Length: 439
Ligand SMILES: Nc1ncnc2c1ncn2[C@@H]1O[C@H](COP(=O)(O)OP(=O)(O)OP(=O)(O)O)[C@@H](O)[C@H]1O
Image 1 (cartoon, rainbow, N blue to C red):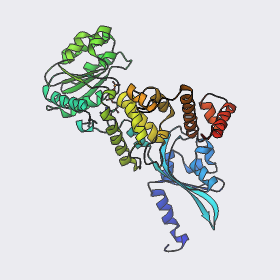
Image 2: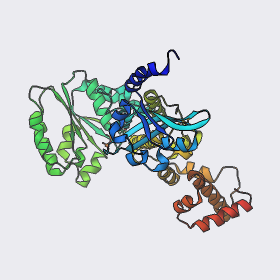
Image 3: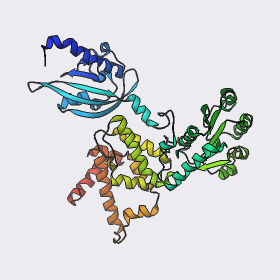
Image 4: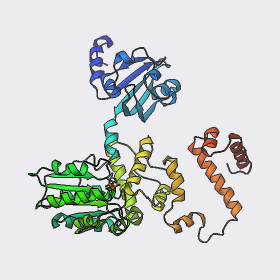
């Protein structure tokens, strides 16, 4: 250090308040002693607010969730910890924190937290393509399977055809993404991409269409999920489309099921279907193109680590097998949400393991194995003799209880609660497993 501490104080003060990292230091009683400008900006508080109060009073988190307090109590540093909480103004904050104990002459005197604000990034990654990028293109679409490659190649032809386009696919298969990519790839570009969200309960939305679309502009009108509009609104939409149908506009619509079935059920107006049906693209559900699952996971993790600098860059073979076996009724959207949920809890892990997956998914993926052959393979292995049922059930019970205990940090009370049994009952089974050498 050059110069004495006193003369350096103004420099330290300046540095602390201009650095882009939130700094919060507390003394050994948990009282705030440093709270810099960036931290105020992150947490929406002022030093006067922080003054004499302890951390617990200021924020709505439980004692065990405050890393500053944990470090103060344990004396052990905690780095790369992600925290999402609501401050006293009710604002949601997500930070990645490094928290260190501060000691002098071997005695713990306080703790300091360095917080990187990732609130905005966290929100942005939720809808990674559509909300983030101004301009989604075909290269943003994961398409490893032959079916998806065919979809992209047909969609590219549609950019030249100057015909209305109908996108057919289950929820979450990527119809919106494809519509935007088509718009951005149009050989004769339009001025505006306008989405008509047909699942809004606002019945005026169709009426407003004519006012919203300015005569002078050429528009790509994407009518999202026309099958969710009432038949009378579909009639109204068709009459507007016919009026608008002049050279230069591009019309795209999407539906969530087979059009013949929708028409038969009375949820899709035949004439509206004919208006769009000149160029039809079917996006298959994810369970029919499993080759896209792992590439999507890889692309998702790469994008995330690029943004946050996380180490998480893969999944274990066990998770891969589970993902490939599951039927994904919510398609890519369901996979994306699952990855959001799993990675938002990750801290320093390098790969996603089975134990990191949310319990609801582990439960349901156990029952919703898509391929019955694969489901059988877990239990009935070729070339192996079948176990008697009661032995199989005993082994399954041991396996399930061990997993449940691990998931609940070996806490008997929590595990018993999660398994819907009494503490005594679980303790009895654990003792029995131990005596039989299974735990
Ligand atoms: N092939 C893909 N590659 C990358 N991301 C995808 C792909 N398919 C879907 N997604 C992502 O999955 C999410 C759901 O996609 P999208 O909203 O386009 O589905 P959709 O078929 O329009 O669903 P809905 O019918 O419910 O509106 C989006 O975040 C989208 O970016």
